[in-house]
Amino acid sequence: MGTMRLLKPLVVSVSLLFFVALSGFAHGFVMTPRSLINRLSQSSYYLTTKELWFDQTLDHYSPYDHRQFKQRYYEFLDYFQAPDGPIFLKICGESSCNGISNDYLGVLAKKFGAAVVSLEHRYYGKSSPFKSHTTENLKYLSSKQALFDLAVFRQWYQESLNLKRNRTGAENSWFVFGVSYSGALSAWFRLKFPHLTCGSLASSAVVHAVYNYTDYDKQVGESAGPECKAVLQEITELVDRSLETNKKELKKQFGAAELEIDGDFLYFLADAAVVAFQYGHPDALCTPLVEAKKAGVDLVAAYAKYVKEYFVGTFCVSVETYNQKHLKNTAVNEGSSDRLWWFQVCTEVAYFQVAPSNDTVRSSKIDTSIFQMSILSVFSPLLCFGAHPTIQMYCSYCRYHLDLCKNVFGEGIYPEVDVTNIYYGGTNIAGSKIIFTNGSQDPWRHASKQTSSPGMPSYIITCHNCGHGIDMRECPQSVSSIEGNAQSCNIPDAVNKVRQKMIEHINLWLSECKGSGWHSM
Image (cartoon, rainbow, N blue to C red; front, side):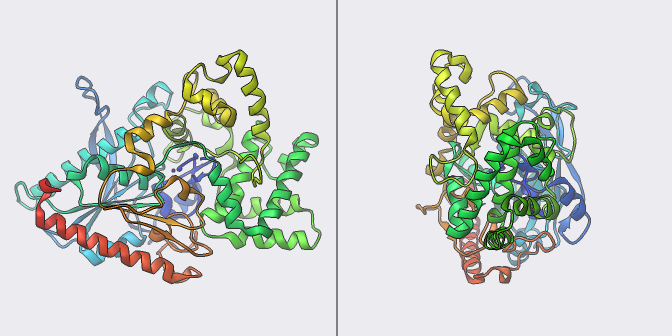
């Protein structure tokens, strides 16, 4: 689920290496940017970076298509208590997976004597089945295919481990982990393949596909607080006005002259604010802007300074990520996830981040043009992606996004949100032994499961800087330190208490799994 203009969502995510499970920065679904991944790819930020390869089936749903592709994976066995220790499957998400990152999962692996394996998501990084990412070639890119990848890999790895240990038919206890979109995959894996895992951790898991995701912007306003929110709203108004009268100079001021489409530019500016709350750094945004307001400083200039120095500088977000011309590039590039994630957004999950009808932080300009288009659609349904009933319902909210989907991928591409939620259950997911965790300041939590139900405990970690995937990373999340030190949180006990609950559930479910056998789960 960053998520989207997730998730990653959405197309490229930003932040720390922990976001190797995401990656890129997709209009609201922030993943790890390419430059940051490259910078952190050698060192102690990873438990391992040794590439291994697996022959994966291209289309799991066809009995006739037997094509395969090379899928990259990693294994870390330093803490493994062979031969009966558990196996932790860490799901990589919508980005290049360059290794097994050194986050809180490493702490858990050491505690439980577990092996850690991690499979790169199909199409991303070095695991692309094709030499070109044309729309036609992307038809095998979906969460459903990805879940089957994990299931087939899990079976193959278990058999390989048995072969190495000279065992036959043995089953280690498996547990699945994921954050954001990969957190959703973690929950969905337990839902669809309960016999293959003892349980799963779904951190900041965007399990509910949403067309009109206004709660995202509402959470940004709540996380900002009244004073900072008012300043952000004033900046939005000033930018909207300037966009009408001085467009070229305005975009140049933000270092975004290449974003010719105004909607792309406005999403870039919205995400720049979002990242501060999503990743636990609210003061980096609010403090300088509130001070600028009190000092009578030009607010647009103050925000431009933040965008260029923090969003682009510290978080290494590329302006290019927001350019639809860039998203139309079909070249296979290990470091670029943008087009791939947008395809998943435009076909499965949407997460279209639009302004609420009132009291919005982000620009409502897109809604204005959308409303005009929705009126026209009464006379010409084709203007709103044909007569598809689901799309007609939401067209008045999501025109910009649907136009992007059409512009980037061609006619007939739209997100089957209802199908996705029917298939997985959305927030009514009916799995078991799934732990859901969310940070109180994370805008993506509204697409996650926030209410506990039998067999699916849900925790919201509440603190000033509790952002996306906080239980698996540091708080506030830091580009320079990703080892997961909860003492960095302004309320470390909030994180530590949930981590203790996680350990209790993992311990219980692993013991139940081992005691009862796989077939009784």
